[in-house]
Length: 171
Image 1 (cartoon, helix red, strand yellow):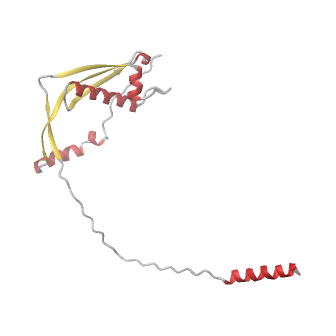
Image 2: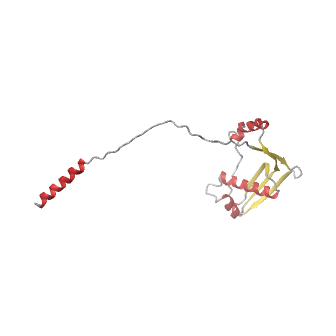
Image 3: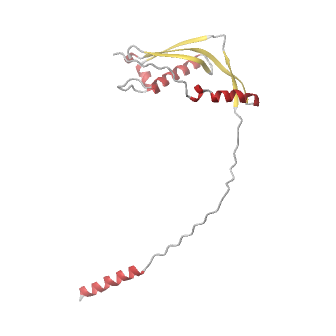
């Protein structure tokens, strides 16, 4: 009797559950909208470079210990130096020389990184001309041809310029 009562209850429950239907309503509308976007345009600033002719060509030699090398460029892998590590060393030498000579830019720097035994460090030699920014002003219409020439130049776009790097390993 209990089994029969239990069977009837389960059957009633199953029928009640299947009789209930979930009703979902969905409404979707599409309309065209025009977003109002406010843009502001800033006219670029141009500046001139004044090369310091009194100093002439500078030559700085920076001696870097292995510990300094590791803190500037990172640890060296088994495959040797990476281009990114060499670029960090070039940036370091350029920064140090610009600080030493109190200038904004080193024009046409030639940078040589050499080492006989990296455990003893390396030598970075930088040769170039010091220059400072002068005559900051908002771009004028007469500057547009110069900016256009520079933006179309293949070296600026990275199409024809590859810096010379030669990382050699000596054991």
